[in-house]
Length: 305
Image 1 (tube, rainbow, N blue to C red):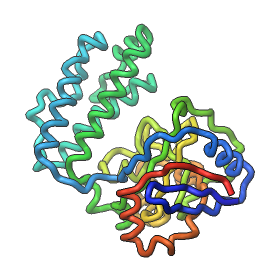
Image 2: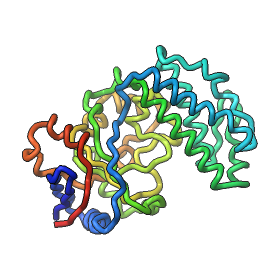
Image 3: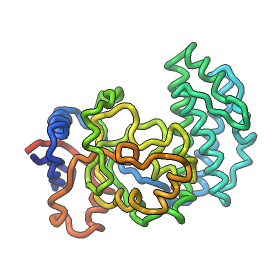
Image 4: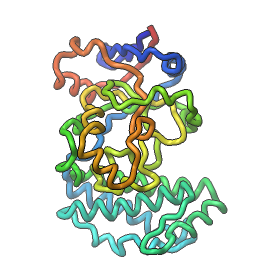
């Protein structure tokens, strides 16, 4: 079975699907759904834009200063005291601060304690969630998005040590209208997980980070929110023909890193669910031509053949 992704430049990516009933049912379903706009994404940032850094950081801190009014709790003591504590010349330090803010928001949403210097920093925020669920959740999600916007303005500090050089290319994240609420993951997908390289994957919709993002952010892989696949599956998919997952997850540096932090490297923990491979890459030319298509085209329709 094949999946045809019809593109805005009148070409198509033809996907040879993984030969599995679950995958076949999945693609039949997505062929009936209304597409969101195709999003071009990157695993980590390779940019350095001081003006955007300052602008996005101001937006983040404007929201942080609203925490007492909206969440009815103090600004967490683990947060930097001032926007002036952020210096783009020291991206490792900036990323460290952003990791703290990110973790506080995700742990609050997950309603689990985030203990920092022996203080439970999420307790009061979780109480606010119980009182006003949607308003609190929306605000925490916005802060989390603000963090990612700042991260996009400087080169990820873990890029230099990343175990392989196959992580800097763009890829597509394709979502669908009405797919905000996922389906609970079940055991009938366990056999699908892999770290072998594929071009098309079930997209991750996780609150935290996957292990590659964790490395690039010089974050702590022992934390609860560092996962490749969360507890829910969505219909969204990623098309990533230029980066290679396998190089990272089979590297000894990755295995040693995980072992040091007492994290499992079994396939269900570090793998993802593949959809299939592009079989007509030759029609696009070389990798640069495919990269051009990813940057300048989008998906207009999906057909199962």
